[in-house]
Amino acid sequence: MTPLHDVRAMVLARCAVATPVQVARADAADCIVAQDVVATEQVPPFANTAVDGYAVRSVDVGRVPVELRVIGELAAGAAPTIAVTAGTAIRIMTGAPIPDGCDCVVMVEDTERIGTDSVNILKSVPAGAAIRAAGSDVAVGATVVTAGMRVTPMIEGVLASINATHVVVYPRVKVGVISTGDELVDDGSPLAAGQIRESNRTMLVRIVEEAGATAIDLGIVRDNEDELEAALRSAVSTGGCDALVTSGGVSMGDYDIVKAVLSRIADMNWVQVAMKPAKPFAFGTLQNPSGVQIPIFGLPGNPVSSLVSFELLARPALRTMMGFGAASHRPEVLAITDDAVKRHPDGKVHFDRVHASWGSDGRVHVSRKSEQGSHQLATTAVANALMMVPDGNGLSAGDDVMVTFLGADAGPTAAK
Image 1: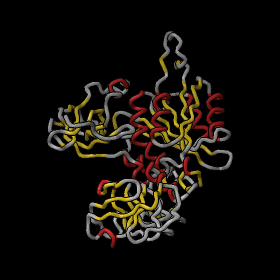
Image 2: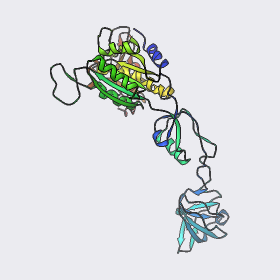
Image 3: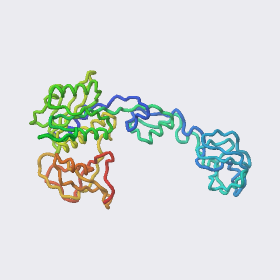
């Protein structure tokens, strides 16, 4: 058996980072920026008020209360047409440009209107009060987004504020997901003898998308080598897939059409990983018509094994291709197990499904789900983490354990 870290290193070494592309800002969401973005516009573009109030001269409000004559009103989006002069004020709304002659704004809460033509200023404010200077957020020439950052909603907002309509990013990889087998049913029809409901492809399509890639559902291919070969070759040519994920047919003793076809048309490695579940794993590349080597991840057929194999090997590789770097891997934390875990030495690291939550001691605690069979996906569905159980005789309640979080909102739940 091969240690997990060695298999992961082999996979990552053959999964190159995708070539950056320029995309419209709206299409860059959650992608990794590949080129610094430099502002060509300043933000804000002009000095404006941070509050609703009155634009005044600080010299006129040095001693309060003081009555000033109101000579106009200025709303956001309007251009000033008159200047503030000695003894006067202009009613101004948040975001409106600062008129000439004004060097501070008094909040409306600190004033008292007198009829229609005057206002009583009740609080003295210094020069610059409540004024947002032009360029105080972003100056022309400033680097506002650096390569390696993920395009979050906040970053999209920054890009919009400087009129950056396009951004250079590492593109989402297109991942073809395929299931094989005459026994699989996914049309809702009654099961015949020996048939099972297809579930792996359904699950894998969703977790490929959750990883930030674009999943292409290639459907079910029946147990026919010619059909499978045609489907795989089509996926990397006209289908435009940048990677392929299959499930089943990778065990050492299996004769399966997946193994037969991939062994013939692709450069594959068939591995026994020193972990449980998900010991059998296959990885290789299939050349597309342009000469590009397309990664293929052959996952085990049992649904939990398929999930764990994807999480620990395929997911970090796909995210590496999309430029995520260190963020390609799921977050890990040192936690405390609330349950004893019995196991026997077998040369493998076990990854048990657990539920992680914050404890009253401020640490993450995990409770183990008792059903750990590689076919028991229903139990896995209520877990939010994988607990690493080293080779040996198990763990005692209260032991420290390393936990890898799962899911789109990876992390522990609220305190117990």
